[in-house]
Image 1 (cartoon, helix red, strand yellow):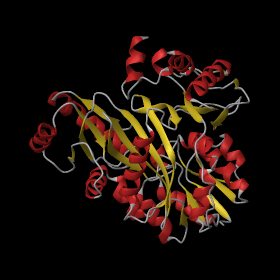
Image 2 (tube, rainbow, N blue to C red; image 1 turned 135 degrees about the horizontal axis):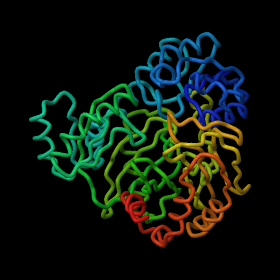
Image 3 (cartoon, rainbow, N blue to C red; image 1 turned 90 degrees about the vertical axis):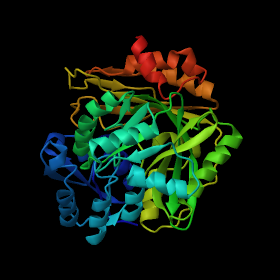
Image 4 (cartoon, rainbow, N blue to C red; image 1 turned 30 degrees about the vertical axis):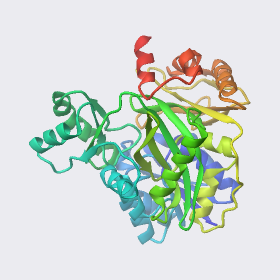
Length: 437
């Protein structure tokens, strides 16, 4: 097992990783920007290194500074969390070259799945269905126009190396494409240090279904599925496990496609395979080669601490995971700050004890919004989806957060909707519900 792990991230996920490391007797090194010097996670870690200024490009995206911090503190492993450098193949390779274990897939696996165009070509070769789409990197405007016409409007413009909703635009016309392309590229470059873009056909009605996997190189473990259809501005808001809209036969097909996708890859570490599900058909969308934000609902339904499992796999420790049959439903609601942020001090933050809450903040902390607006992830379980929804309604009603403006009222209203309670929604529903208010 590792002796000391550097966490190349911040906030909620850094807290989660520190707690997992404590259970495995691994010392932790936190890194921080100047604006995060007093953050809770820096107080929980065994050591802290300030790696740069507030801007992410000079700190959390500064691979050299992070590696130097790992070398100077004698860390033998780096965990990237999610976002920032988590799916940066060059950074993974740099860690390996420095003799530091990268807690994640190999650089080659990240490169394959990190490029949406390459990943979809690979999926097709494995006989996994994909939506029509094409990379437009390096193409002139006339060729981009031709690609758009060939695929057919409506379209989705995506960052080829992106995630977390950044760099994504829905396009109805060629004028939309022309107007949005430069902005999307700039957004992608700022977030991922890569402005490559991908065009894909847009489904007017679909569910977003994903599969959690853990690879050991020799074996691929499927740890369940999640429904992440309820998204706003391309950011997930409510997630649940398992995806209750699937029949047993559809779930079997979903898992078979996921195994088929990675059968020849000798995949290692955690990964999430994302699909669009429409008219009974699954379409491979992308694979995130990292720990996912919403991993907690899978932990609650399987009883497996998948963060610890990922650390053990990276350290070469044999995994003895329980064979689980999901007998309950878990739902997560993301509590986020909303604009404008006029008050940054969280003077009160309480929630019911029966809810699991993953957060990087405590009462008295200052909210830092320059990286993301996430305050906490609140999770509940129930023996059925209806029971889990009822408990989520009760839990959200009991949350007390005084300070920054948040989406708490919107979450409460959303879970009270009959369409949500009856499991009748698509990837576009949440935006429609927001517009109705």
